[in-house]
Image (cartoon, rainbow, N blue to C red; front, side, top):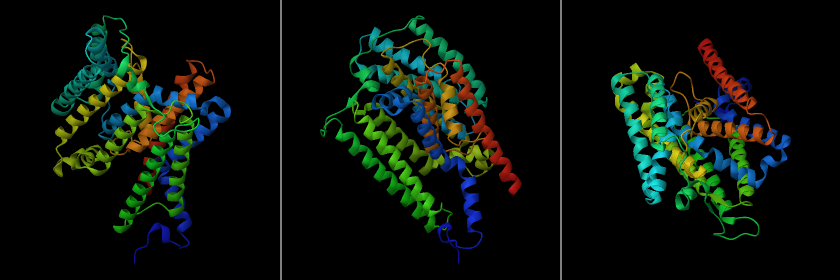
Length: 402
């Protein structure tokens, strides 16, 4: 009779539990790492957990998380996209020309930006999927092309302001819907519902694994994970509810995370991405349409880069030729810190999101502490290097054990 991890009371159970913790450090330990980083910065800088700073944290780094969703899919595919920062500049420039210079309604600027993003993704997807040029080379060329186009469209000058509804995309809030004395009840209710939904989803997933005799995490660790997520989420909700309420951009982020989590975890398209990244030859022999999946993965990356372009330009209330400079590095770092593999086939949406949050917290914390602009990229680079080194160490350890 087979037994699950929870029911294993043999003398080897302790060592098995230890191996489980080590082997899943990148998957489950990343959440603990995020909590540790938050605690450290809250001790070093008391203003870090203030309602105003946490709200600004969401507004200032939301576009990096949006990019990380698409970048995770590209990296799992064993590709890379270096052009997303330039696409942000290009799509923001297009939206500004339509809305600011042309005087069109806000939604036309958003639509124009999204169409350009899709065209950019199709352009790069064609060269990677059909012609067979590595994504690194194609996106490196795209980084130069799209940055140049953004500069030409803007005539090398900033174009602002958007104002109105477009500005509120990244700067608007929902506040006072359910009242509250000094805090926004609606924000707390939304987060509480999200926490309950997360717990139910995790429990159903666990029951499904047990039903098919798959390995599951030890019950104490599973419960601890739910509790940590609930405490962190509700503490965050409590703080921002004392500021301006629930940001519009946070709602957009939540919707995108749910959608892409389902795509990568529960659809044939997501499974095909993992199959191609894990072993492209085996995927081809299994009937996976490699070119089709690769093409649409890059189209999706272009789409999400355009969404990030709209969000960033709305946050800045204008378009700038240098917008998005270096954002591709933050998105890539978020994926690797969140557990994605350098060789493809491994990575989760939740990990990329938490990795992005860690990068955002570190950047914000260093800014509050007055760390110089020269030191900040050094710290980020060291964190990325250590994350990749840990990934390689895990691979070597796994191959040795095998």
